[in-house]
Image (tube, rainbow, N blue to C red; front, side, top):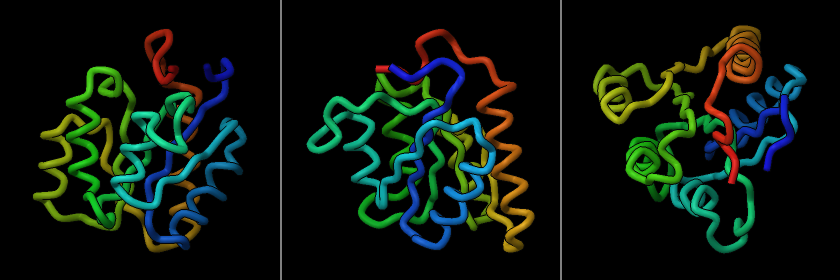
Length: 149
């Protein structure tokens, strides 16, 4: 069970540089007690389903999901999350470099909560992630028990 008032993120990102920037920006927001990372779509689903080394892990409060992942795309991961009764209520935010209209349409067609395009500028990226943390960690209200196992 997550501690009240603190947010647990699952960052699904294969690019180490992008992951480092996101983790640094999330930590600076100071409302997160834990950031876990999956490096591909298969690992993300294993984590969320509590399989293998991820057995017993509490569910995250939010999933930050890249689209361009090895083994299983972000859109495939999103579709699996939304099809799983236990996982479908977890907020999913696409955090990607893709501005492709079809990717955006497909993400919203699979009930993504938000689609954010990563800015190239570090300061803008940092501000976007900070705002995202404030929104999901402070302002947003989720049903009681959401994001817990």
